[in-house]
Length: 245
Ligand code: ADP
Image (cartoon, rainbow, N blue to C red; front, side, top):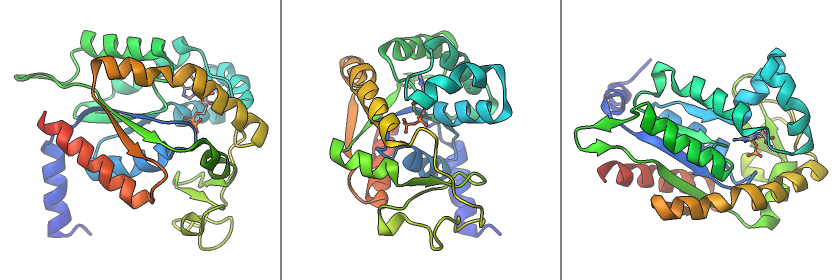
């Protein structure tokens, strides 16, 4: 049951225009974990291209069939395919107050498409002007990423992410979700050879995005190696401050 306080909080969040937020960072930086928390706090949806693609694969759709082999090799899926998926998702009414993009954009081409798409479809136009994209970069040392990715386990039912390599983020019973008791799964692309390929592709294809956004938007850098709660507070602060701009 909702308490008076949480109801008050929900009303406040419902009225607020959060705008578009992009979470940047290498695979394993914690984008998915943080995006889920931030979405709950601000009551906006998480738009994760990785999750949407995995859902398409599970349902055996045409998109899923086109994407699966690329994903299993740690390569990027074509810009056209992910852009079509993102356009469909952003057209849903729950994106009207804002959304968190997690895993998109991943190439400069996708970032250019996103800028154009938001402008052409009149996203977040207020009397004070158009609400700008807030770009948050989670920074994590390369050496930490490998351990995080090989230890990642996900609940197929509720989506909660655990890690067997860190005591604080493990499940209470090994291999079982604390929330709903489902058996945790390891993603197919969290194998060491595939992880190395994903990290390499991040360096060459996604890292140039930081420069792209630094030219047009203010990029907020947050230390992604800190404790999850510390990172969440920093992201919330960045969004709150971004809201006043
Ligand atoms: P991570 O960020 O941990 O690598 P994701 O779940 O975001 O994982 O993505 C998994 C895979 O899905 C990527 O390695 C890639 O093949 C594909 N993918 C996700 N988002 C995009 C995107 N924006 N452009 C191209 N491919 C993508």
